[in-house]
Image: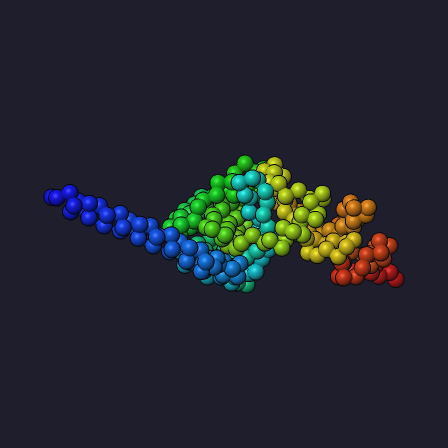
Length: 273
């Protein structure tokens, strides 16, 4: 092969390489300019489809419930509030609960960790096959749990899915998929002096802020088997709990504390005879 021919081949190869690189760069620029990431609403829609797929794998049906009472533990140990949908498993197909297995509500002792194994295995396989990543920290194995519950967590992009299984209970299974609630995070940040958002396996708790109307705030707090509604007030740039309880407050108490009605919503009077 002559030197002139070799030179032409090399020039052609160089030209093709340059053209290929230009096409790659042009394609990347075009993709960057035209790509629009999914909206939160689209992620919520996708999360519902994953829940539907899980129901099909478990062979159950159940009504999806809107819920905001799930938290995701991130790699930094921060509790991130979630919003999305859940379905429940139980021993009877009623009130929107999906019936699973042959166990009846007359023998709750059979609802134990052995009974949960097929549920957990099916759930694990479903989410891993759906390209979710298993979250070890959201299994919460080190948590001191009086109810001896089982937990699991999976994530894919912005979608977070969790489950909780409670032995000797009916309903016993709760399955959730959703996304991080950015609005709730902003509300929680304002009340951070009152409630920590850091995961503590020895005392796991969750809280939500319903509303802030300065100088007042209302929300709810829950631990494993107990919780309460709270009202806080900001005085001299410091938040303080001024009322908490499991039921509607006394009207006289709200009047004494001068709390606006839009904060406590409803109250009750003690009827005397």
